[in-house]
Image (cartoon, rainbow, N blue to C red; front, side, top):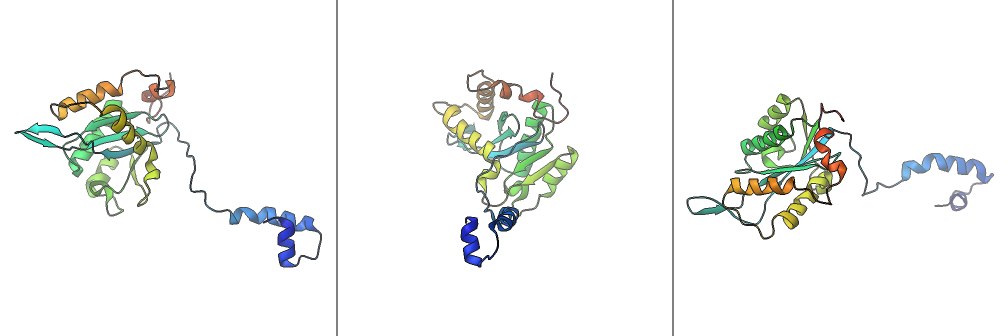
Length: 211
């Protein structure tokens, strides 16, 4: 609301200059919350984690096929993505998958961001295995607010990218075959992968240094 309108509404009898100064001080207190914001991450600060469930069923032996979850991890700073198919969404399999991805990089992010996955923190509080995992690695697991997928939008977008760019037209003989194909696809050189993403292994994890 412009200052002259405010002056009229409150019956301001003095010069407009003091009112304008006062309004300039208090206006920020009444600014609405912007539903869209941009977050900048430092190297090694955050890795977002999520489970992606590809529609293609994978043979698991005994003539059986299953839709198995894929654990996807995306580094906040460089957008570097790594992923692995795991046997289930049970806590032990998820934590083992996280360890495998972190071990493959060789560095531990300061914060692992998860949604309210039941095996990690479905009640809004970390499960005992998840808390123990974070404590062992001297990191922390931060749970996203309920019903807020944009809180971990980086990994959510990578889930969609895997769905549309990796999965179509592929057949898999086993979970191991899925992971082999996925790893070859993740490391392939493409124009879409910027120099910043290619340098992720040396910039997005704690304890690394630029060369």
